[in-house]
Amino acid sequence: MFKVDQLKFLEAMADSASSVVDYFKGNIAYINIMCNMSVDCDCCNVAEDPCMKDIGILSSLDPVAIDQACIDLVKSSNDPGKDHLLERINSRHGTHTIDVADKLGIGTKEYELIEL
Image (cartoon, rainbow, N blue to C red):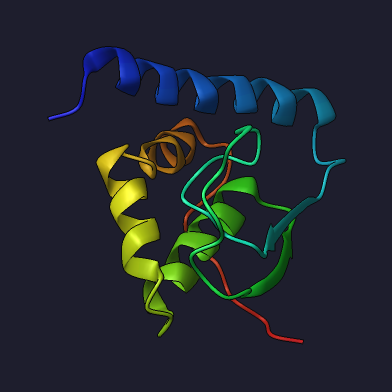
């Protein structure tokens, strides 16, 4: 079970993102770079080495769809490092923010992946 404070923090992240999306009112694009993926945050001073090979760069006008696509690409990967990354995401309830953002109407978890 997850701590209530942790869930509230994840929900606050979605709420904060909603404010940014509302402020820019459709004048924003999102880019996720799926390279050097580690179980630790980019902001961590002593982050673990990357555990997965690079997947690529995603772009979208929908912040929820792009984050859901990233999670789905990790899950569908054949890279053996995905188990370590998914364990960290799942143990921290890492997709909760995406679920809440979807419910807040920031975007949708539905997407079409177009490879270039």
